[in-house]
Amino acid sequence: MDFYTFVLRKSEDYWVALCLENGLVGQGITKEDATNKLKEAIESFVEVCKEESDVYSAPLSIKELHEFLKVEGKKPESEEYELKAVYA
Image (cartoon, rainbow, N blue to C red; front, side, top):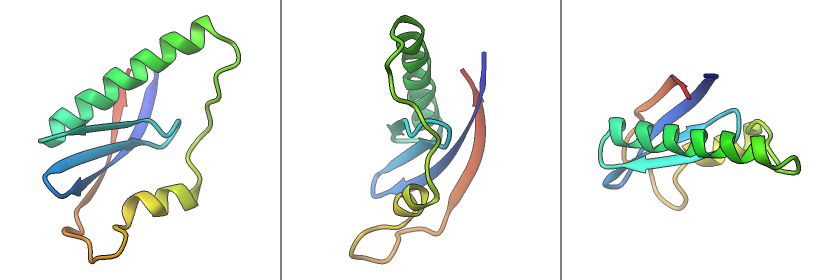
C-alpha cells in the first residue's frame, strides 16, 4: 500500500476529493463517500499501471490545484478545504 495526499472541497451538493500525486478524483454526497471513491480510483489505477507500461501519471501542478480550488464565475460556496492522506 502506498500513501497518497488529497484535497477535499465542497462543490454544490457533493464533496470532491482530488489526489495530488496523480490527479485522480472521487466524488460523493459526504466527505467519506468522496474519500472512498478516490481510494477505489487509485487502487484501480495502480492495477492498470502494473499491467501496462505506457500509462501517464504525474503529480498535479500548482496551476491545476489552483483551478480545482476555485469555482468558475461565482464566489465559492464554502472556504472549507481539507488536506488528507489515504493508503491505497
